[in-house]
Amino acid sequence: MGFSAATKAVCRANRQKWLTAVQVRDLLDASGFNLRKYTFAMASVHNTLKRFHKNGLLEHKRDKFEGSLYRWGIPVDVGVPGSSPRTQATVRTELKK
Image 1: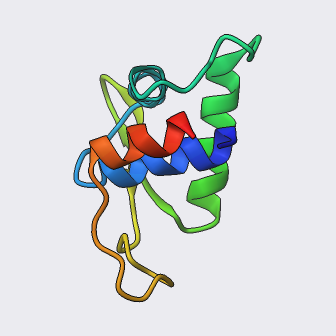
Image 2 (image 1 turned 180 degrees about the vertical axis):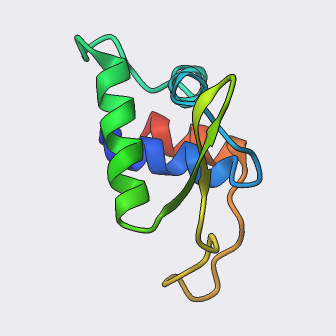
């Protein structure tokens, strides 16, 4: 699974929470995604989140203390008939493939 797909998976799994880029990075790491191969992992996270927001996948808001916050902005099962909401355990399984 590539960086964009892994980022999308953790955002979808945590879709009810507003997340900072640091939290997304930590969720990627906790789910088993190998961030060590990215020299500037935070730059990759920020760029990916901005691109997802621009494409309508994520909602964005600014917080006075935390800065930019992102949240999954579309229903989980859009475009996938019969799919069910994903859980963090499902995301971990996908990332290990």
